[in-house]
Length: 276
Image (cartoon, rainbow, N blue to C red; front, top):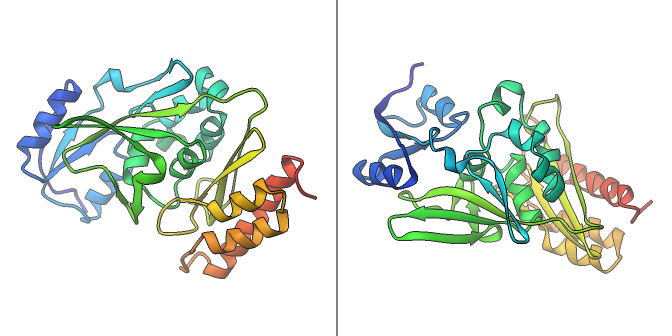
């Protein structure tokens, strides 16, 4: 099936892109890496949209430091995240997550901003930004606003980004000495979406757990985090089962995904020296 679109325009800057979205009268779609959007267009899931191509806006690429925060441009590609020394030093969770995403062809085109804005509940980055306590930067006609990752993901493929806004950057607290970042997932084959996955950040004895593939959105597992912070590893596993609401589908049942999540969390705890 061929994609059906209502038009195409290439933006030269963020203000230009916002202007183009405004002119699209509610049917504008942002084209970043295009790895999810083009597939949806080809399947006929979305038709007649005006594509606003932002891939040429170089100011939205790369990672920089701003005080004690790492700033990652929304157009930074997965492959670049895996190789960037600043990201490896200050947000190693993302550097570890990038190679888990699909295959080389996808990683060479897909972008972190596209992944977060698409908000697939089985994707790695959304859970990572929850674990990292990140902030997402949105720019729109009313100006710039910052949204905590915890408040960004609202439901299945649903986020706090308004139609006329563009996700431009991700702000992440820099890793401190002694921090640990771990991501683990279970998938049938390398490159497949995970049946279950967890992203964990430990900082100063406290833990943040982001779950993916285990609900209709990425989940911050508050119950499990509280038990883990209290040193109750068994209670942590029981709490995790209540934090998540995994789906059943042709790949795995809800009960199997819940079991996998517990196995992954216990393994991560053992890797961090906090469980046997």
